[in-house]
Length: 154
Image 1 (cartoon, one colour):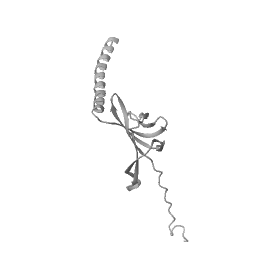
Image 2 (cartoon, rainbow, N blue to C red):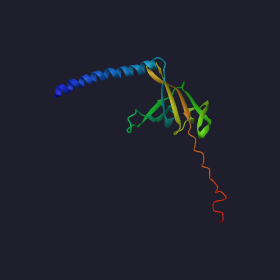
Image 3 (cartoon, rainbow, N blue to C red):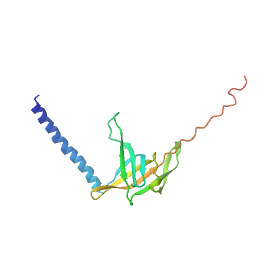
Image 4 (cartoon, rainbow, N blue to C red):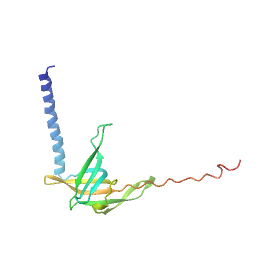
């Protein structure tokens, strides 16, 4: 195969790829333009109260065993609703969310889980909601007292 043949085949592949990416990107833009939202979920790594910004680590695009976390920063506005999801003891030790209460940005801590919702406003995406879930420490393990039959005189 000559270099020109390879380049011609490559150009055809790129000619197919570019419209495909444009259709995908157009679909995302159309969904956001139609009032849909975009959500990012991850663990909070930093909070900047002075700038009204948070940074989270979230799972990046799936690449099998090579998938990595992606760090994303979000600037909050005066209209951003920040809530803490309080849990109630569920079965099996889970904490199912049962109540939602508004909190200030200073109550967000690194290690919290954040669900950040964005919506299109003109030509930009704006953070409309940040829902925080604070991980609970594991319950202490119960120690089991030895039963009377163990170690009793034989």
